[in-house]
Image 1 (tube, rainbow, N blue to C red):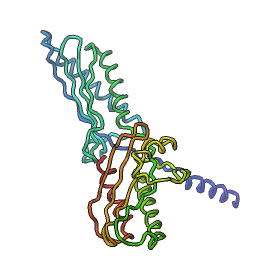
Image 2: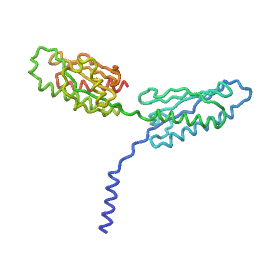
Image 3: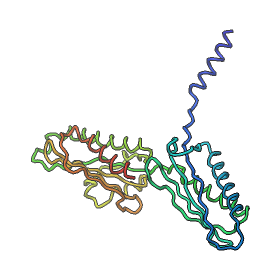
Image 4: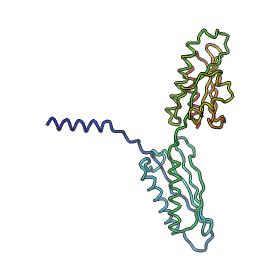
Length: 284
């Protein structure tokens, strides 16, 4: 009896620690439209309706068979993405397919492509469906996170205060800013934060090195670099700025500036996180 209870407890313990499968992403799919402008003498409406119906059934079957996704009736029923499209026959052997995938939450296109396929037989439609299915699945898959080297935020102090008067507290608040920005970017799922702690001490500020941070980021294995600066105008006024570069080319990919903000040094972190969230995460 005791042994049975022990086995049952062990089984429950295993299941309680088993990884929970991620919730399937809802995908809505409207029937594609079909237009025949080939001017062929024979009426092929019935054949085209049958082939289009088989095309849509196969496309829905392919999407639904992938455990990462579930078919949803519409965007109002919890679909994160919506697939729309249309097919046009322009001549006896040439057809075109226009396919788009919409990110419902972000209200933007993640795919918008025009394909051509030859033939108007069951086999040619099946080949077209298999190709379109692969393309749609690739568009639905979340992109790999960008490896981002977020360097320590720097302070540009334009006040008349003594340089050493608040150096310790300034360093502490700047560290909070950097940590807050890194955490926000990491939690967005769009970025993988690259460790920059092994970087050697800088002879000059990164904000004044004409883009040298991109080269440093590339050596650290990052795709992009981010530097930021807090500009203290007075003890209760400051501005914030950041800049993102492509680590390979050094090209500026994004930048943001907060404009004048009210608040003492303890509010720097809140302002920096808000700026990065608004300009770098929500606008992407």
